Length: 203
Image (tube, rainbow, N blue to C red; front, side, top):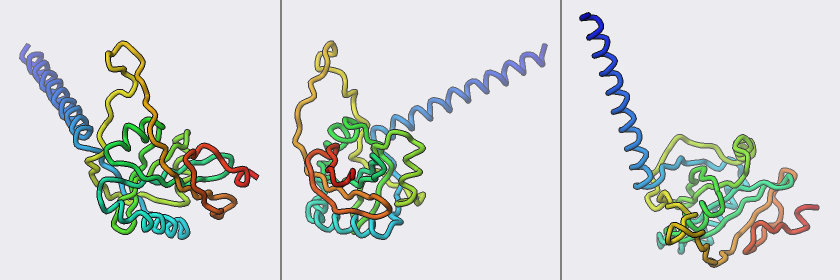
């Protein structure tokens, strides 16, 4: 009888410990969402891409140093062509009006001229992300908290919770796109519609 009581007591302690552990995990996750995103730093391996990133950063350095805007580099892949898409966004809008609205993956960040550039991707298949990006960048293990990247509210709830939300039209930023085809970078171009590919690239 004593053994059974002891066993039940041990089980009770184990359950209590498991419950407390789950509470701590939930608390940490909630805290992370409230405080920002922990992102890993990536290093650009490809020499020409490194030069491109530094050049684009230098073009916008004064704006970036104001700390109101952030630059992102989105890696896309279509029709055997890899696209490196730069855009400049307001820090307080980049999550809701760009990353989550357009289904971007947040891979991490890269450092260029002491400015953090968000590294994104909208490659559909997760295994392909590593296969494609591995030639150009690699993770370092260093992490940094980005406090302005807040976990978004539900984008699909209307104001009265009974209607489909109205997705207002927002300004179209200018994208700077560098295509990479047949193991080399081709002529860059600027556009307000990164989904529209110039015919010369697909030939």
